Length: 102
Length: 240
Image (tube, rainbow over all chains, first blue to last red; front, side, top):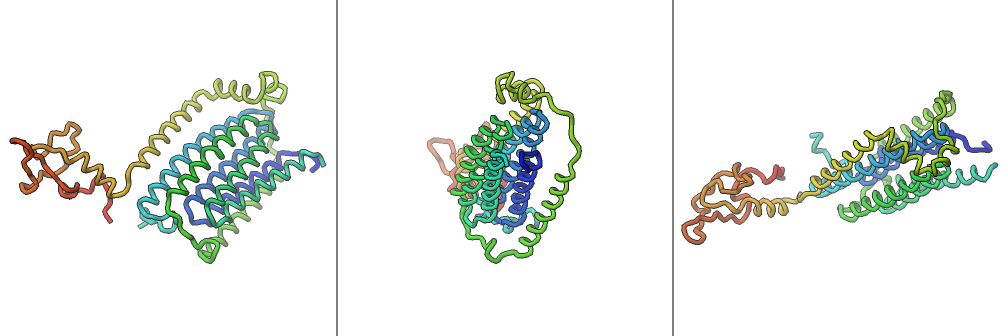
């Protein structure tokens, strides 16, 4: 372990992804769940760029760039939904949102 | 141990600790600040991985745009004191952490036994340096090989803009009624109105007691609110 390998970056990516996943599974505030989703997207970017670094390729970096663009679009729509939700139901607690369920 | 390994461990440690802070913080604003810290550390790691452009894009897009948006929404929505991590839903928390540990074990096994290696790509550091740097190399690749995906991305961003406008339209009943009043109150003597936009076509004709003479022989229909006109809720609003 005296020099950096791809495994270092993959483990970092895995750790960030799993922290984000645990956050999505355990938290109830919609905004925090949203932030955890961003964290997971970012973790996937670390993997892409780590592989691109290993393979001397640019494809991974370009894919990460597309992920960032899609994350921006997702942020806009997701936060719009959060706004509509809080206006309509006066809550950001995901357990209170059951209009689609019942 | 090489110095860059130490730097990697420092950056990765702070990134992971900040990510844990996002999940564990009670106040959503603290979560957002932790998220900024995590993103900035990950951007530094991108620099170590020779992805300078993505590091800059990460800082600009994530910490510059998305976090600001999140903070604005945090200020706008009603804040509640949720009982999470302070007593509520222990089963869900246990299941969440357990699933996280299972996934961590699986991914660790996958990483440690990884043997598949693709062919090396066509952009070693010398080739990247030969075209002028990371940004130039990405630009060459992006606007030649990935022409169609980047146009699809442009379309996606346009659709996201339209969607955000749609989602941000007035949602409160009072605001909607104000809009409906502005749209529907001007209907002249003909019961269905003469509005060229024709949204009034769905409205029932007004009763005689709603007609008030307004200047000469024209009858202007007056309504105090949109509900006097129609049983239909304004703009598909669900009444509570």
